[in-house]
Amino acid sequence: MAEWLFSSGGHTHVADFSERERLSFRQGASKAYLEEQPIFPGFWLYRGEATAGCRFKIEVDGGEAKRGRLILGAILTSRGVASLEGCGDEVWREDGRSYVMTPVERRAAYEVDAHHGWRSVAVRLEPEALDILAGEAVPELLVESLDHCRDNVLDMAALPTRLRLVAQELLQPAFRGPMNRIFRQAKTLEFLAHQFGVLERSGQAEEALPVRDLAKVRVAHERLLHDLREPPDLDALAKDVGLSPKRLNRGFRELYGTTVFAFLRDARLEAARKALEAGTPLPLKQLAWELGYQQVSNFVTAFRRRFGVTPGAWKRGETEV
Image 1 (cartoon, rainbow, N blue to C red):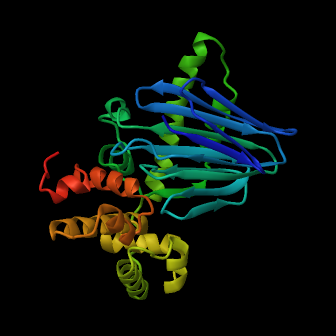
Image 2: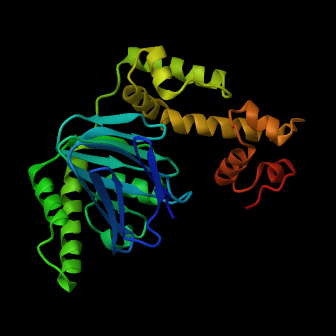
Image 3: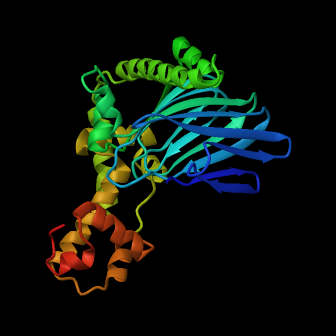
């Protein structure tokens, strides 16, 4: 079960949806809620609202390892910053934004400035959703995210009028009682249809980065490999080579097929594998530290996720899952 952290000022609240469908949090006169409702297998609907004049942050972990996940959302009112670990930030400064996020093993966060209130609707999709959507004309990103665990997408776009209207209907359903479930299901599918339209338009092929920018990406690539223990973070690395974080990530995807965050993660694990195969005399704790892991437990977990066995088992030649 994903852990949710709500914070506002000096107040923090940790919760999940294991026992309740609706989480409420309050500080002074400001109050907000976030609601999770299962719709179909692999589909969850999220609805959230907050009173005007409050600020808060929502953080949530990245779910189960090796399990695809796609978030498609609509922010009707508020401004703020959305972030996905290793993918930089998306800032919205006005009401009306749609967004897409693939938080697979990456922590996501939303910093919300509800100057005129906060109203938000989102749908979370996991692999079972493909059984229902099979045979339909779905965006390529849907399959890449749910079936192949693509985890490097965070993007925002203007909120189309029709998508806004459907989101409003989901926030204020026309039916109560048993008919409300049918209404939610129908409107959730309509919400997704409009979101897929946004994805199709935004997914049109982008022009390749110019040669001068790709040269800067290669410099960033070498700087990451030069110091796996203490590499610069995304913002610092991008500034160092003269690119924006988003453009640097785009360049990494173009040249290396992945984001800066994922590249660094894979480079560290590949270096660990080679060291273990070469018979490194370093204890695991020291090897983990040399590769930038502050906790050996995090190193062991990441290695096992990547190669199917622990570092110790790999060193002993036990490479079968």
